[in-house]
Image (cartoon, rainbow, N blue to C red; front, side, top):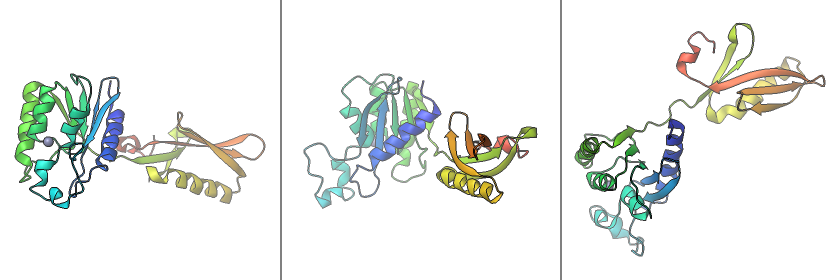
Length: 230
Ligand SMILES: [Zn+2]
């Protein structure tokens, strides 16, 4: 089963693949996976193999639309096996032509960011793509960037513990160092710490008597902390 966690992973992979595109305006990446979470194919928007993509005028609109293969289509063309029942991830919502191919190949799910339905160039094709998916029974997931990239830290204590701080994921280690400094300032003899990701626990070693100071952490969810407690 493909969980939201894996949706994130495959979308991140599609984003990475999109950087391989030489398109001057929008690099798009696509990934096809099967139900076992196995990557079957990747594709980006670019020219066919053997076609010179270093000719500048071929990259100018409207000419480029004749040269460029869309990422989703490339991904389908690159796959060596039947794609029935598989999922396609794409960093840009599919056009109607790619939707035709996705439908015809029997994919069962499309994951992509919700398009700008009123976009003068793409909106109409994307609306038709969705109509096609609905009619065929292809599941569409409008992917949202993970907005909740915050981590909460709290101390274990009576009453369920107290939230200390909420930081963004990239500040995880910085916060631990900050917390360690605070413990040292309080006179605790912190010699080091270990992070137990499974338990969501940081164990600060205090001195030689095997004493520990425990700090819990976990993904911050707004509802968890209504009362300042987890
Ligand atoms: Zn397309």
